[in-house]
Length: 290
Image (cartoon, rainbow, N blue to C red; front, side, top):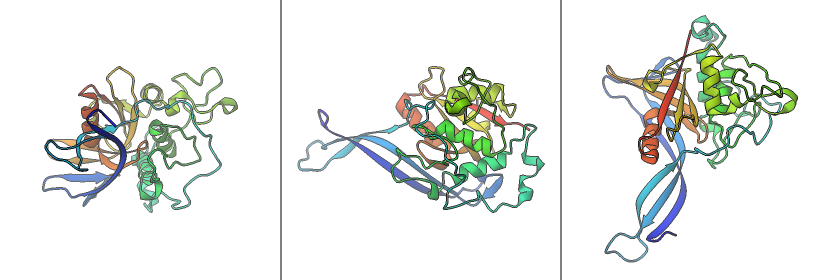
């Protein structure tokens, strides 16, 4: 209860089918789509008050703020990998012809952007989400964190063919290593699960990306990072799976964890961040590079 009413925490799931207007093109995983089937679950903090001049039990929402998980732990996993590979509900990312994964979609370090996108699409679809948004539906081949956004990005890149770089007890925190199983089962490297650490590794050491801090330029297989408060440290990461394009603009479409979002236009996340952080958020991008 607040001074003037009530505060409620609610989880809101949205499922939207968006059809492009004339002159707009939706592309997912390199293929033009007739519609965008977007889904997401967000936690909202609602402030409710009784409208002026009214009595009884009627309440109106006077404030709605989305929680963006900016304080969650991305470094220390809450569980370690199990010997499982994929969900029992679906064992393949798609029925795509093997020719689609040819050399044109694989770069010089072996990262196939199409495989990366397929993994991100699979593990955020309706078969891979719990009703409780506090719990991410994850591939147990990998560690699970309280906040899995960057962990999920790393998984998608690894499944796309990006090779790990093993760490030792001393180097686990270093920027030039990247692995989900560090020496002596100490857990993943900081670059695996931490957004800021991951950005530095992918930009400076992976050889798989070029830097472009205009998120509208990032295409499928690329990564978008958010520094929610503008303090210089990145808090969030998501995989780009496609774009919504017009003659004059392009909007990336993302898949992510914590909370689960499937084929979500980046503008949704940008609007939530603008509302909560009043324009302080800074965005960074890494483009898949041939």
